Image (tube, rainbow, N blue to C red; front, side, top):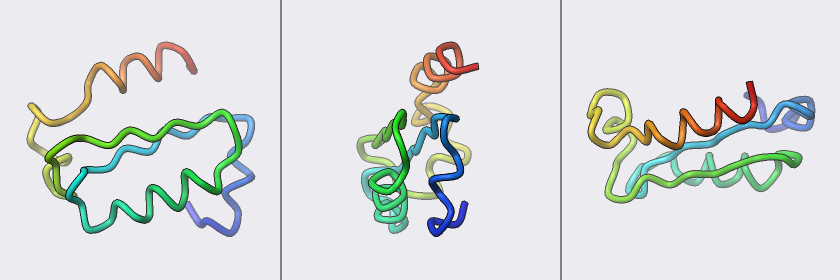
Length: 72
């Protein structure tokens, strides 16, 4: 999602998920800071960027389920 147009996400709430050790974490934090409310940022402790693709024990399933149950 281009940050130049992030305000267009409103009123749909974005959920940003990043690994604590991810090299790309800054991008999620920057996007979160610029996104309109409502928005959520979830940092996964100990996870790197690629870890959240296929290490199912690190994927925050409860956070995803709770977010989608609330907003869909």
